[in-house]
Image (cartoon, rainbow, N blue to C red; front, top):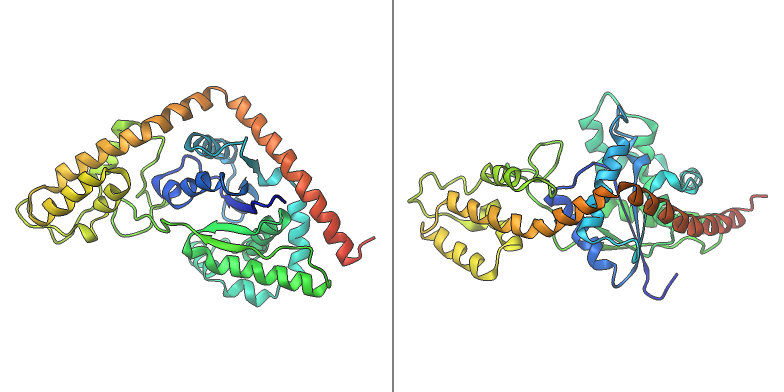
Length: 328
């Protein structure tokens, strides 16, 4: 490992990415590339825990990687690959499961959430997926994991699993990772209530056309107390204003903050300005994505090269793991 430290992060292949993915993860991924040795993974095996059909799995994987590359994640700076292309992670998952109490898994809040969401499909993989997540991180000896605050329990769980392994086998083979909280932990959807999500259809895709983006922005819920154009608004509780603070200029943000409170600007005009600035911000991204999409076979080759680089780390880690356990 270099003196820069190593970051690992993975994301399920959900297809085209939305603003929540960008602000909550991808923007951070890009920034970390200059300060860390980064390992970024499309966790397609994780996806199987909740998927009932894999019909779109390949397409969704490629679509997400296209967005990653267009956003600035670089195969020259980072290792970018697909989880299933490095099978050592499944072996480490099995080994780590031997030092993991079942109660720890069923107590995790995300497991309870998944049970509520899909009571008809509570499978072994769903119960054990935090162990697979721990294996993802430990396999590449990552010391830093960029996450949102809602993922904190999983990183602490990973640290506990690593400690348990090292204690059980009297070694220091695996590394306890530290959590690096993203600056923009939660992006609210256009409904103004819940976290932006494809499954809730309250998202704005980065690769959408300008017309599609305009339509989604105009659907955004604003200050619910502002019933008429002449009513003063409260930008502090308005989701449109929260995105203005990211995509509009400081002067525009100051103007909107002031004029909304004075009823000097209406919600319609406020949304139009956000849509304009958002499309301006996304235009270079869309151009880069279109160029990568023209050469999708090169993108697949890039993922294969990334898997080779990841495998080199994984094979060495597993040699050390087997030696520590005492396997013949």
